[in-house]
Length: 299
Image 1 (cartoon, one colour):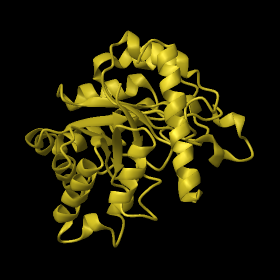
Image 2 (image 1 turned 30 degrees about the vertical axis):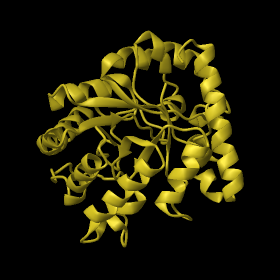
Image 3 (image 1 turned 120 degrees about the vertical axis):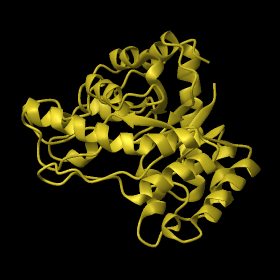
Image 4 (image 1 turned 135 degrees about the vertical axis):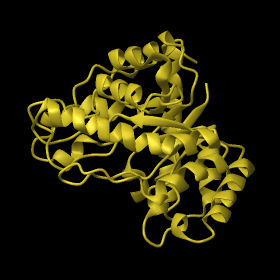
């Protein structure tokens, strides 16, 4: 079993090289390199020499004895209010090239959202069609680069008459089918699924061999469990510290013969911890996750 972790909480106060060493020393084999912060104004992904920077990331990963098991693309892209089509901006094509330069095959994307609530089946179908067209524009560059597009399940805290788009296994599988290429996969975010009261085990079984990447994280459950503090719902705790039954999750992963990276996605709380405490926290997360996997007969 290869164990990975998102590097999001690491690279704000140390070099990428130092962050990679800390991740290795905490017991991980892989890093999920999230490009979000690096794509913000002033970030290295917007610089003219961004390819050189990405190559230094790759070198730092190799020097630490890690692999880049998956990459997270920029997210937070929205449609126009009337769903008038807009092609993917250049930064998403850069994300594909960055993933390839990191010698990684799995690039995780959030679907494109509509800010207003999708309150009819017609709007839902239109949004899926929009996303299918949008991702098809990225598909050829991704395939040429040897990169898989992996669609992540999402959530929406707002009350609405239907399950929010792309929060269910059915929606993601429908979108993947609409894009129309076998290289398109799925990334399961367990925390997002738990917030939406989804049956995570059933989702894993539905995804089957389309499941290519994981964001394993825990929380306290549905949005209703935190009615006065809705921001707490997506807490991104380590497995075993919320209310998800991760023993069942690992049993389901074993059942479908999942062989990808077991990737953890802890939250922003890591960035608030002193370095020593942060390293102890992720080391503990690795130990607990491996213990749960062993109990399930996965490792």
